[in-house]
Length: 511
Image (cartoon, rainbow, N blue to C red):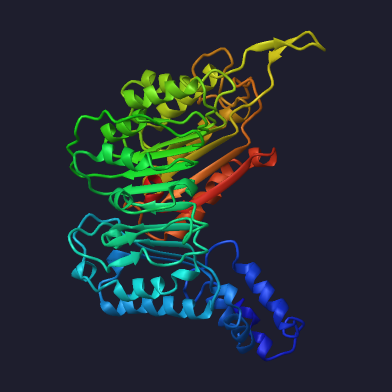
């Protein structure tokens, strides 16, 4: 777009375009992803091209209704830096006029070290929070997030005497939730369907429980009755369709877990992330979801070995329609048989359509287990009425594999990525696999008969995660991985395989 600055100096068809049409072009250019308020990104870059474009951008409020601002806490250590963020927020609020707001403001941290005193002060975030809450009548999708920063108070925020007629999603986490008071009902928040809050806020607040369909719970610390508290909160929801729980603790001593079991008849997606196995097992033991189609575990190594996880899967395999299962870091497998047993619980056919895995040092065992998993979920052969030949029955098959990988680890072990991709291609058309149940032979590149007697896999998604081991330009490394993977799979892409890529931070694994 910057090259279009020449429009000020020489006439062109673009410079003669009506302002209304230019405004429509601008909106189209930023509508897919919430814009980041930086000088080189839309819509700021649009306004920097020339005087005409600036006038149109500034006078088009819809350009300023979506914002995603993410800053690492470690890079903000002075009031001046916070003031700059405050000025950006004020600018966007002013230019958005009276339009609905879709704003995300996140202060992230990858460090467990104490944060600067700036973040512990009562007044540090007050101007920013105040500016946003003054516009609460315009909220549509609002996310305010900081890490848990230890003792200290944030600005007291009261959402108990306000009308939020347009609010659909509210996410308020970290130290910003320490003094949050919420009292919402169908009368003052008629469109609210999704909330992202810690357990202690949910315990104390009033929400339109029956209209909420999506719940995110994020907790950093807890008392011994934590699982009971979570289940008590969940019992208030009657129409949940998606449930995400992230419980991350350094030290935790839990009471014996025997809470009452709750049935969620409409729940289709369950994502539980915890580094404490007893928390994971306790929550799962308390839930029944007969309509569940997607199940995700993250954070707890060897989750597939957990009796609580196994019991949950066995309890649901009989009547649910699970199609998607995704696991986070599993760690090295001392007994691959346990891992294979976990995946066999999702058989028989039609079996899973989407499997997600995290690449770590146990990856070779993972894909050997996936091979066995495919064998266990194969459909029984039936006789074709037209030909009289026996062949695989039609129906669902594994359609997509999602591979998450930390870029620093993968960058320092380049051979692992190549081997894993070779393993994944056995799901395409039997490259390196045998139909009779023998071990996968990754050393023989020649074609072999497909071992998965259903439709071949159609999609592969690679989730590239930023991590502490990564040095250099993250974007450059990401695009380097993208080029390498695309080259390795070029033959399959030509034959119809869909490839997709995602660059995200480590928090994606734990909400």
